[in-house]
Image 1: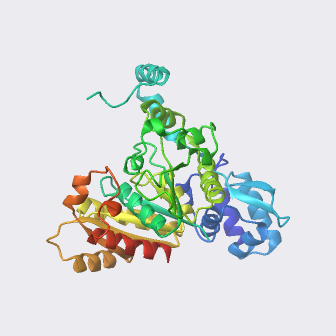
Image 2: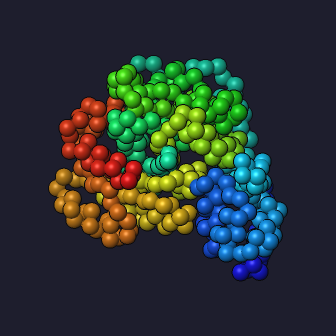
Image 3: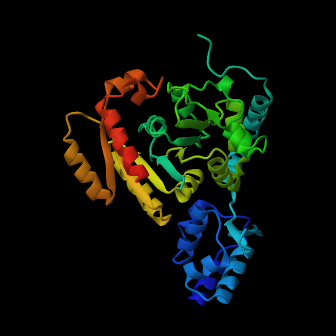
Length: 126
Length: 253
């Protein structure tokens, strides 16, 4: 199981956060554990070990890999004294940002002017 | 234990925002403190049902995502605006998305930190002492909607009895199951009154292997109301209101 998890995580690039769609591409038990991390807000190492079905020291290696590959971020020590691990999210809308750049430079100028325009009603006057 | 509920549909026009407003209001009428977040940043609209005008929005979800305010500062108490009494124990707090074109354009161009969205939900529940947080999502499968689903304890997936909705709903059901959503309910909305509703329910349940919380009829009263208010308050004895109440029972169970 440990080797399987290592292979699965290593197949992912080093990235600065993941997208929710990435979760749907993972296999079990990794997907289940990360889904639970999203839903609960954070997980501690013992929870990871339980979810992955691994001894604590092996689970720690998996968590380190997940940190390295940008799936997780470690958080401040919680009330229980354990380090909390949270899912690290990629910035939303990055593809849309590329799209804006790809469409046309002329559009960028108009949009920039729109952003700078003073407050005015968006609805037409009756 | 506070509940997070996502209201979603694959396609637009299914009645998602209307359902959000009606369900939130019914929950508040039961004495619950309900938060509603409009995460439909590209086409915000649920604020209209809650009668919150754009010039009354002192802060929006956009402001929070840009770091201009805390999430609770973007929460507007719309309980009385919507028509509930001031003395109501239950409250509805709305975090609207901005309807200013430049704000929408800016967030589309720049994107935002999804971790902030996640943190915001939790903080709002804690600080506003919410019993329920309802997330009104953008239609279709997108990163933000998937995050909402991934974070939620329950999802209400709305569809019309329409082939495009049927196909798209199948996609969403599959994705939601990949994200281990603990509870998923379907709501078939805008159903022609000539249909056998029992039959519709059975067929949809069989097709998706998912419970149908309610089959709602197409309603002239709803169309005439035209999102100018919350249906369940205007028509408290209507069959649709009774159906929405049953949906609330199932979501909160």
